[in-house]
Image (cartoon, rainbow, N blue to C red):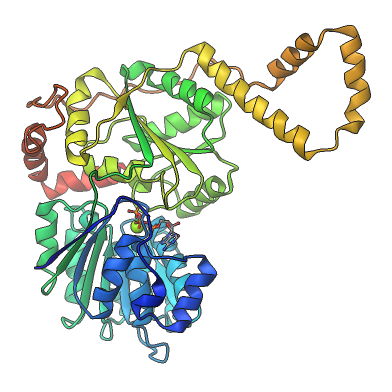
Length: 495
Ligand SMILES: Nc1ncnc2c1ncn2[C@@H]1O[C@H](COP(=O)(O)OP(=O)(O)OP(=O)(O)O)[C@@H](O)[C@H]1O
Ligand SMILES: [Mg+2]
């Protein structure tokens, strides 16, 4: 196995798509999308993929892995062939939809037909769509298997299989489905695995399904992108909700995702935020597909500005405008942390991630830091005064733009009258008070959630960056990885 390393930190471009032997039709599609230059993972994997190599592609979140596998995939599609030629497997329905949309855009000029098949959508509708001869199928494992068993998907002509979020797909919750799907695909195929994280244990599982895989890793000092400012707040479980609302008031995120550990947690936090006057909605695996899609749509449009989610939204989702990620509960796995916070700071944009950690969970925090090779800075919960100050700043910004962008002549007379009766500061203060969303203390119900079990080994607690990376974390991982399939399934059901 050859290992390629490219030393680049983020989305900084390396080269031109024109130099990568891509057809003029696809170049035209890329132009239409607005991709001008390649990202490092694209630069490195597209030529190898076009040459037919099996690839394990690893690069930080938000650095263009979808197009890295998508462009060669589209290039290799023969639009005249009526059979399915490529398969992309993704862990969640929303991600399958998103990837299919991006492939559609990349394949637009080549007329490469793309179809997403996923659970929760009427299967007969999918069967009708499958009869229209899509060349590329993007799907979730369960529904793909369903179609394979019904023989509504024929895999004989498939030349490429992509596992997006490969480490997740090869983990215990999904591995059996993946094995079954791959056994139905011709052996003479190209297999591509992509993810921001690729623990060695999982990589070797992946290699079982590959021939002479080329490992392309965009090398960076840290596993997370440098544009994400990472903080933690040490907070007792019962204080978490008020800490969250203070942060939301103080930081006024454009769009924020709050990750919770369980579905109940997500429901309760979303409900409690709504009661306190935020436009928040929850998303998790127990909701109907229609509801999941409508929540996500509202979030993308900005009519919901806080999305409360389980790990179902942790991987792959690319929603522009997500400025803040809050880990209401610290994730159990460092990989989950990397993907969760990677919902912000995408495509070179700035982002902020704040992780709540209860005092006895500090071991998990250190394990995350050891894996990502990045220290989180400690932050304090904003004070009430700071929260109000944050809201005032928002009002001041709004006032500035209103003055800049509007004709206010109709309001002058009333304003002058007010100023005859009161001094200017009193008038403005009163208006500020009316406009500022003052912290709300309406009682809400958040059930107590026990912190994660104490990590036995708490090595590397000090401040040294050079900690023994396989210390406490390594041992814990081993224990975790030995969980039975049943336990893993239970974990999957929780989200
Ligand atoms: N060459 C490019 N030029 C500009 N923008 C790009 C380019 N390639 C991808 N992007 C944009 O960057 C964003 C992130 O891309 P993508 O979703 O593929 O990231 P990813 O590496 O798969 O992240 P994750 O690990 O979270 O799945 C998307 O909005 C995508 O449109
Ligand atoms: Mg991705």
